[in-house]
Amino acid sequence: MKPVAVITGASAGIGAELARVFAANGHELALVARREQRLRELAEEIAASGRPKPLVLAADLAQRDASAELGRALAASGCEPQYVVNNAGYGLIGHAAEIDRAGQLEMIDLNARALLDLSLTFVESLRRHRGGILNVASVAGVMPGPGSAVYYASKAFALSFSEALHHELKPQGVRVTCLCPGPVSTEFQIRAGITPSGDNPLVDVSAARVAEEGYRGLMRGKRVVVPGLIPKLLFALVPRIVPKSFLLAQLEARQMARRKRSPES
Image 1: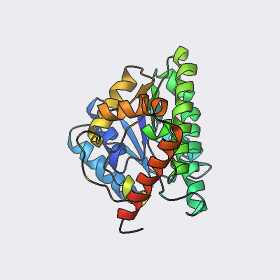
Image 2: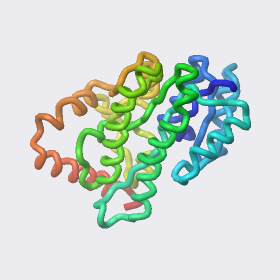
Image 3: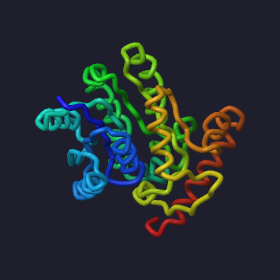
């Protein structure tokens, strides 16, 4: 079976950049997302650069049997994972009791349940190939998020689970890294119902840089990677030094302001 890097949510944003970074470093890829045409365009781009053409697998990872179907599709193509990159996910802005509950439950299915399932389904293969898991969380994972409560909670799960799994699988030769970016201007904001406020050079980090640092961190066996100086400070210091009541109020005000700027809100 040919070892590949399986990258979910590869149709745009950080996922597409991760695919480019893995390909540039000599890995063969399996690209996974719902938007098959986007995946095929990316596969053609990678092949045009002289790299092996990635396998394209269109799938809705929020479905309960997605990991089993993905495993069967990989096996049918003569592939098995050496790396699993859990990048697929989305957020919603608004008070939890007021926005669509089905959408929030689907967010949990994708951001948390699918991440867990895909992290564990292929451990034997990852062990065999001395590979690893890169789980994409967020600096949001270290704080509560009024105005985006379920999204923040899902990223807290991803961070906590990844750090524990890092410890459990390290003796078996399997690396587990949690990538925790701060603000990144991608299509993620559009689906969340907000309009990006524009680049802030002190805070924003490009998707390409996030992908590059995430890849390097995984190869080095780092437990957590936070790209950018300000996001690092937010991740390490804000939950410890800022009073929780003040932090909650500020985060809610920020999320609601971002929602109001959106033409869809």
